[in-house]
Amino acid sequence: MSLVDNTSLKLPKENPEAQDFLPLLGTDHVELYVGNAKQAAHYYMSAWGFQPLAYAGLETGMKDRVSYVLEQDKIRLVLTSPLKPGGDINRHIDQHGDGVKAIALWVDDATGSYEETVKRGAESYFEPKTMKDEFGEVVLSGIHTYGETVHVFVERSNYKGPFLPGYRAWNPYYKPESTGLKFIDHMVGNVGWNEMNKWVAFYAEVMGFAQLISFDDKDISTDYTALMSKVMSNGNGRIKFPINEPAEGRKKSQIEEYIEFYNGAGVQHMAMATDNIIETVSALKNRGVEFLTVPATYYEDVLDRVGEIDEKLEPLRDLGILIDRDDEGYLLQIFTKPILDRPTLFIEIIQRKGAKSFGKGNFKALFEAIEREQESRGTL
Image (cartoon, rainbow, N blue to C red; front, top):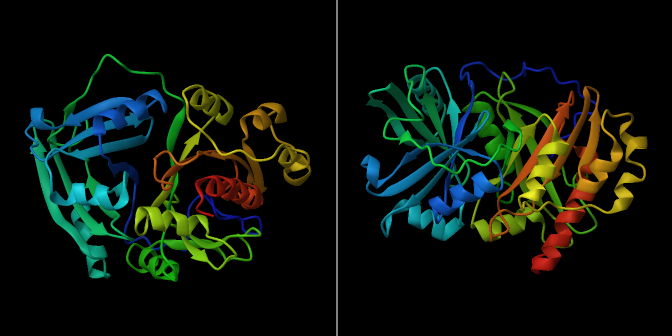
């Protein structure tokens, strides 16, 4: 969930407290390990409007795995499945189910990014390597972060191909229309008990991020469950990583449920931005995407809380879209139910109308909606 409010804190577009030793240009791609990449690609195309971009597999000389690359505006997803028994991808899927393996970060210098972060304490995932084909070259390197999640640094200024060397353009007949998703706004990680500050320190000391704000269980709780969260951001504000950990509550929190079914720390959700959340959510619902719902009473006094907005309230209420405001403006957001059989990964749709915050005013309604889903699963 979007877990930060900045109503008392005016956030500039850039984060001046973040150090500049690791300049990040944006999110290059997100790679998910999945049980059946071909079928997963069809889901993200049909339900979410992603477009086919590139493919790697037996036909391109890749013998142990297959990957389908999809894009929508600035969002790139890589869906990877193993082709043979055994190996790390099979083990990862067996332990975690489908889930995010790599958050790839676009950089000018993948070698320098690797050397700087490893020098500051990061555990190496793989050393810098240069990949070449007829379209040029790409330099990649990687480090570990929470759980089995990794960051891959991607330097692609000398490459003109469809994605990476080893991939070929993928141009099938079936190309459903986009749903208006633009870019990844933030990605949220769930970590275990008493691990939040460890990973906050990792992003601060190893990657030069700064903490925007934090919330404890007094801020983020219901009658039954609680959690704590801190949001880390890089210097230009293009990369934002909220980090959540459980807190003591009367029943099992959403973070505990995630960790139980994911078998450890990992990416809880991806927040994808849109310029028109009413059109995007309407399209997604028509394609079968299921969203959390809040009681109709949420909308009775929401405008008293958030003030005037550009949109009419009726379509927001009909779709279940939440509203919140900070000193910079307001935002509109909605959250899917888990998009997998395990109650782990989900997706947030967000439209910012000036707001830099993450929807604190919606926490109670949102978490109670999640608890209703947990109760139906018997995991509350």
